[in-house]
Image 1: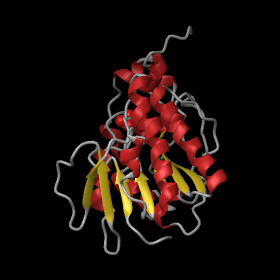
Image 2: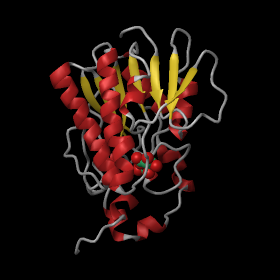
Image 3: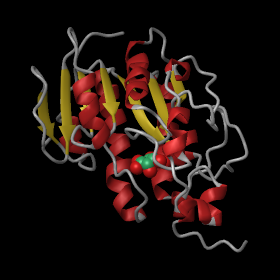
Image 4: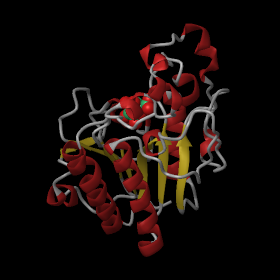
Length: 263
Ligand code: 15L
């Protein structure tokens, strides 16, 4: 794995700030970027640069000596296409071009919403069909395909982590299948940063949940250790479970957003 700093995008977001803290370790230099200034104290030796992912020149000005880019910057919920396009689609393109210029590998925060219209009664491995459940999921599918193109055409290495629900602890029924613990998130990102022959991979960003819908064939996915099951007693069935569309599909409420297909 090449030497050089690691650029973390989305550093002011929920997962970004966690990674800023947890990826900082001896011998690794982290550079943070986001559209908004972090509201936490930067770990020692860590720099922050403001940049709008939608602004190609601003992204390319972030430097070109990175060993890796951990790309977590994005709009993270379902929105109109116009709101998603700049940060998530153009932004991913700019980041992959920055990675090319740097000869950096990319750890891309993809999402289960790239496959969200798969039903809950099927088990999927990493090679399943992309079935985005909205414009957000579509932008994550785009990122995965961009990763594939840049590998085939330019030899750029990447790991697309199809993240489930990365929250402190499961709070709803769906999370018992989709939960990714913070510790497992860090394990998976570290596995991507340090893998000696990363190539172009997709791995589920999910803990080793007893009720998981996703089967990890890739060795990176098997780095996950935690299991949501120990929280099962505390989880309550919410409104989403009563809604037929949300409860039928893996993407949950994202699938129901704007859904008007005749049943
Ligand atoms: C995501 O991709 C979202 O960013 C996050 O807010 C959650 O909704 C998560 O998926 C999920 O599916 O639980």
